Length: 241
Image (tube, rainbow, N blue to C red; front, side, top):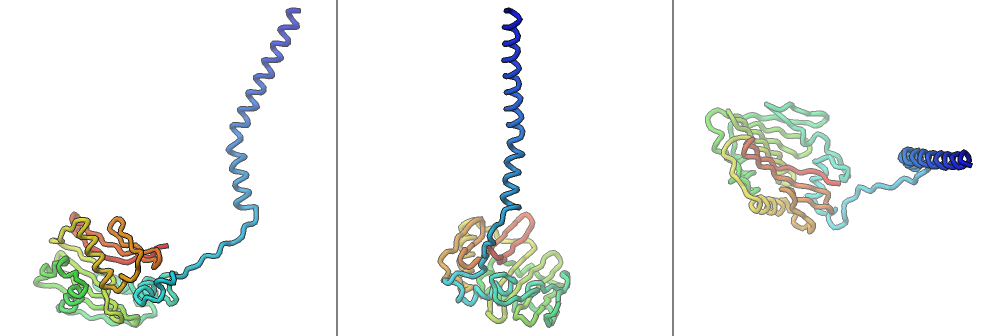
């Protein structure tokens, strides 16, 4: 009788152990089964292709400056491509000509640069007086209507990209000392004025976020970087998704 009871006890114990091992195996295998099913769904099962539309919102597609920015930024939202338009570089930059015709002039006259900055209401933020003594002014122009001006001094340099067709400043970068410090409110006000200067204030969904103005409708982003430690001020445009 005792042997029979011990046999039953051992049998139950073996069943419990076997059950625990089975559960443990299932737990261990579950991730493998899950990822196998996910892989099957993702790679084996047929999926319909989703059509991706790169069209601007009807509210902004007829605004000339929106189309122009997408063109010069070589955007997939542009009907025309202006590849290499913003790759004009001279002197301490390499010159990219490609298929575009280009002329390069070197002088010591910064009157045009001053005029461009004044028109864009940015002259007070760029210390042009730092360019004293020996400095060069390099002007590059291509057949897309984009002119690039570069001033280079002993310890400072300035680069502008000017749309001569639309008479607008598209890009600015200054490296040097005495950059005016701006707080968050001043940066916002500066960007707002620049948006108005660019004739883009008709776009109603501009949002200010982390020193950038972003429009989802226009798929454009304008940023202003001011780094007083690195002595850099840069204004630029980007394409957003």
